Image (cartoon, rainbow, N blue to C red):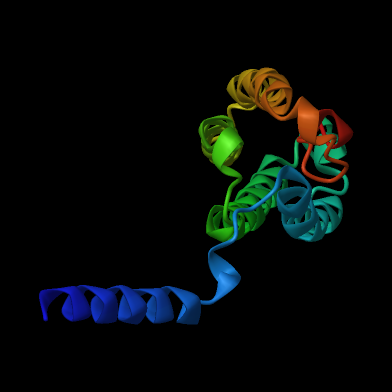
Length: 160
């Protein structure tokens, strides 16, 4: 009888495993790129509107206005990062993509810091934050060169 029980339990386990949907399929790099590019595209379009004229505002001494623009850009990037975190990462690139997302978090922090500096009238200190922002963006982009992102490449030079 113990042989029958073993067979029955094996059959039951096989039936349970067969009932599990195939949604546990692993994410591929191509699938990841397809999932994140629309998120990044939306963020890029938002930043184009929000950061329009920020450089001119700083040069013209409109630091409060430029500060609000940087805070709005940081908020949009924070929203995009939250959405990016929700996308399943390919197992083979999980560590690299986690570092990439950490670099994006640093971008948010630097945008906010530059915004605070501008709000306090410290244009030179804000410019130093922007230089750090550009440097961090280059390092962060290097992490994901293999993905050949179009919209997920961070390029602060477009705006500053």
